[in-house]
Image 1 (tube, helix red, strand yellow):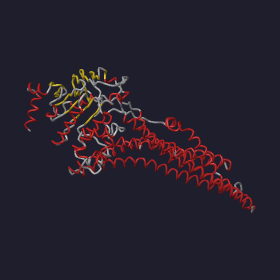
Image 2 (image 1 turned 90 degrees about the vertical axis):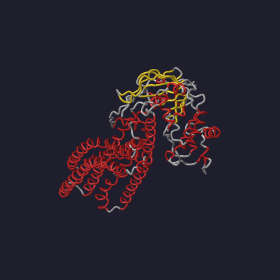
Image 3 (image 1 turned 30 degrees about the horizontal axis):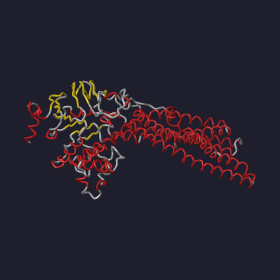
Image 4 (image 1 turned 60 degrees about the horizontal axis):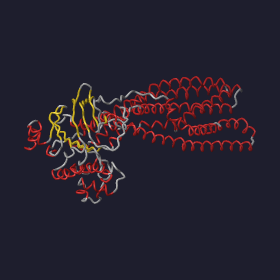
Length: 588
């Protein structure tokens, strides 16, 4: 479901080599320049062996000159040492730098993702986002690491080798360039075909990972409903879809491999053997010339074949960066509206004035809602499921933006207020409260990591967390598992309330905050909530109406409208919808 308030649209991006160079390689140009110098030294040193092979066969061996042989061995040995040293330095400089860039880009993408509006996360699987943040940026390695080294080094070696081949025998070189050119044409066509396949692969991969993440998170539900086989089939379908995509790319890759075998290893080598044999029999080419030619030819062909593999890597890298670019081009929620008001200390007066909201165009869920929540007051939202209570709370929390109407905080239009300055005054306790893997202490300290031990203990006692942590061997340092799986629902809820108490907000939203509690826990929490809500603007969503008797105002929401409003006593006296709900619960 796509929310109409989400202005971000996923436009297909296609990042070019030039743009990738400007944004990724150019900022690191000093290191890249050093890398290029090392590449030149590396490849020039590699050409010493075929050059000296001619000297060995044509000069040293016939003359039986041992001093010249020793000199030749020293030159070749030095060249090999230069090759080995430069290879080490290239890996140390560029490959390490590439890994640093990957970590840096991951951090940027994660920062961007967290800046997007809630509606984006409502419509995007968390596993898909994990794939985008962790996998899609991997292609940077091939742009600035080994891929760049092999690409630039291969081009340099091939060009120098062609010059040396022409110097030895222009006609043989011309014959070689024909199959090389044909292979280049085949490779370019294949790359053009492969890139969209790699892009789709990234999307499928994210989809499969997203489903897998959901499956692992919901394993208790799956086992509870004996649905393992169903989930297995869904996952098998996803991985088969991924396999079919990979199969397409392998076809193009196989075409390049077979083309290189036939055109380069086959036609070129066979032709050179025949032509070279003819020239040697005619006496116009020495055995040393022929050996040098074949070795230089290998130096020219090897990087071309290697570059075809690098081309596949770069194509896959650019496809992943295409998807990263999509995310980076999205508008952060802070910038979706002209937010210029910086809040300081606030009173906490919140007002809704004819506010309407729709998740989908033409399907309003709230219609002209108007009410005031004064500083320090408690506003309870009640009504049947799907009536719009949580939507009102979402609007008050700035998680959603109204379709029409005005919401104000201390008479300032909330749509003009900088979100960070507003949310630092906000505390939220949800029905299905999220806890992070770690200790109880870490979860309570989440909103204020630098809080003192005294402040922490006050929050712990106020939320009656100590009532159960005192029974644990590790106390507040007890590990709670992923999403607090080792705790009961009531214990998780009390930790969430302690977290909100420690945050010390001016505005509190309690969304079914006591729904998961047993009677004993609820009694304890009601006491702590009463203390928490003092002097703070509070919105309470509750199905258990016995918990909101003391609210300053109760809004009965039905079908996106305020059907009734008043205090508990006033609404009971009017014998309307609230009266029906309350008396019905009292009889249960």
